[in-house]
Structures are given as C-alpha cells and as structure tokens.
Length: 478
Image 1 (cartoon, rainbow, N blue to C red):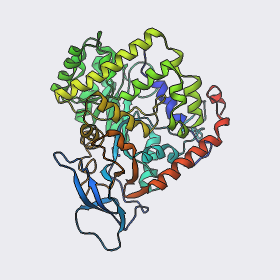
Image 2 (spheres, rainbow, N blue to C red):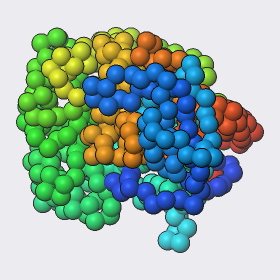
Image 3 (cartoon, rainbow, N blue to C red):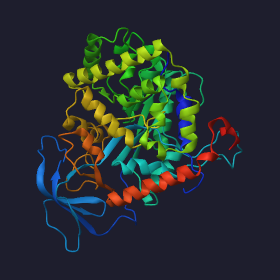
Image 4 (cartoon, helix red, strand yellow):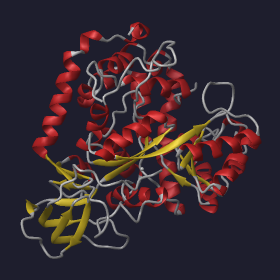
C-alpha cells in the first residue's frame, strides 16, 4: 500500500487553503520594510535559551531589539525603548519548519493566457497559523512562482509571516511539471531552477538512478543544496542514493521503504550510510502518525482543535475524500503501525550515529496543520529519543545551519534577525511548553498573546462564515 502523498496531492494542497475573501528566504536577506518598527524593544529579566552551541541558559537576561535585529544581549538599554516584562518567562529563537507545502493562487480548470488563476489564497490567512505558533522561518519544498510573490508580500510588510526558503522540485516519469528522465535534462533542470531564483533542489520518487546522480552533481556545481526522497529506483541499493551532496532525506519512511523487516540492524545501517556521506535527516514523524490515525478513524481529523483555522474546502476534502481512510485495511493499518515504530527507531539510531536531525512536518498533508504541527513534531521527536534541548536544536540552530542562514538566525545573538518566541514555561523541562506562547517577534514585529489570539479568532470566524459555500466534490465548479 502506497501511503506517501504523490505529486498530484501536493498540487491540490497548494490550492486548498482558499479564501472566499481575497487579500492578497533562497534570497532570505530581506530588505528593510517601512513597517519594521524603528523604535527599540527590550525584554527584561527573561530566562534566555539562546541555542548557541554549548551555551547554558541565562536567567535574568535583557535582550534589546532595534528594528528587525537583535541589538544586544545584556547590553545597554536605549532611551525610550518599549519594555516587555520577561519575569517567569523563557525566550528561545523563532522556530523553523524544514518541510512545508504552502497554498498559492491557482485553478482546477482550464483557463486562458491572461486569466491563469481562478482561485485565490489570502497570504495572511495562509501565514497566520505559522506566526501564531512561533514559526518564523519555513522551508517550502516543491515551491512555485507564486511563493516568490508571497515572500515579497512578507518582506514588504504587507503580510505578517515567516521567512521563506524555497526549493524547486525535480521528478521523473511523465507527469506535468519539472520532470526529467535523462542526466542531461536533469542538469538543465537544476540550472533552470538556479536561474529562476531558487537556492535549493528537491528530488522526488520517480527519478531514475542516472538522472538522480546527475542532479546531485550539478546542484553541487551550482552551489545548491539538495533535499528530498530516495527515488524508488534505488530499492535495494540505498547506498547508491546516499551520496555526498545529497544533503537531506525529507522523511524517515524513505528509509522504511528500503527495509523488508524494519529491524534495528537496518536502522543502524541506514544511519551509518547517512553519517558517512554527510546526509541529514528530517524525520517528519507527524505525517505517518496522522496517516495511521486517519486510517483507523476520521475522528482524528474531525476532532483536531486547529481544524477551525483550515479553509472549509480543505476540511471537506479531508473528511469526505480522505485517501488514507478510504483505502484502509487491517493489513495496511498494521503495516503503518510497524512503520511508525520503525521511524522512532530510526531517530534513535541516527542520533546515536551523530547524524544531524532537523524538525519538519510536511505541513499541508491531510490533518497536518501549518504551524501547529511543528509542536506535534517536537513532542514526537522527544518521544523517539531526543532530549528537549536536542528537539529545540532541531527546530532552531540546526535548520539555520543546513539552510546556510546560521549567520542570520537560529540563535539569539546580537546582530541576528529578531525572530523570537517568548514562552510562559520552560521548554527544556517539558517540550510541550513550546505551545505556551506569550508572544512572538517576527522580523522585529512584536505580536503579544492578545494580538495572536485576535488573529486566530478572526481567521476562525472567516472560515466558519464560509463553511457552507465549499464542497470538495464540486471544486471544479468554483
């Protein structure tokens, strides 16, 4: 049974979080927005978890924010600065989700050249769940031209949203899109993606072995990091896929597909191969957990507290056309449960081997809600064997290192961007405390708990008001 969403699924997902109301980083070095506050903020007497390697938490720290930057830690307080009381609170870097799929404008039907979008996504509504959950940077895998526009809206200050790193997806087979089946075409696809402004490449499941190798090699020449799937062609030959410059495997279950018995020996073998070739892992544990839950019952989706922030068309799709539930069988559910267990053992084995692990969620898949799912992933990583500190590292410092942005974000240090998450409880004692959000700094813009609550309430109200207008089976009529 094939349980991973295919390319068509993600093309649909990008169209789903659609508004009945229309409003509306590769190059992550933003220009200053006129909406970035020009006055200073000061967080005083806070427990600081900087996530700098080797640094211990600081109590009673003072963090000064000027514009979009952290001006200092325990430095001089500027005159007239707005003071935020940090007593009894903990400050960590803004979170990074290393695997998301973000909806953009699009269509389900044939259009004409000057009218290629029929359904429009509100960028703010798409981004609100991220920032409300302290997710201040996202890595969009399989990005499109529309994502460059969304990123520009954020950088202009028109939308409050996370920084966006964008990866162009390259696949094999005969599907529409950036599809290649020869080494020369694979190399040209990489060069084209580079020219279009992408800094990262995502490889997908239908690539043949020779084309995959050519893509990896050309991406290295173009100084583009590669993330993605282990193509199906490598079944039984995983050592030929885990090669230098294949920077990161995007799912733990990509290794599960390579194992016939889900044994500890296989987990350790895969971990050694990854370690020897510098390949990182983003387990995306939450995806398989959600798939297994939905195979058993759709109540797992129906009862999600964060479902109220998901557009009604997507809600309807998850509840009436759910491929995981419709295709479920006792044997399939048992296999999924074994894979979930193997994924956990993979995390443990990769940790023991010293392979860097980063937090990604594959947000946009059925039941995996933007922003909220990263906290679920952190909890699952701890359950699988990471310490709370290691889990935090997987969503802050380590992702910034892999993206090549560790000079700009990922830790709390003077000169870095003011992407910060203020918590009401200590995440080092209980990782679930990352959900207890007192406020978020997004590129120097302060969102307190009240503001976040209003943003989510407004979104929930708009979703509810249009719930009767959308039905998945009628999507081609919109």
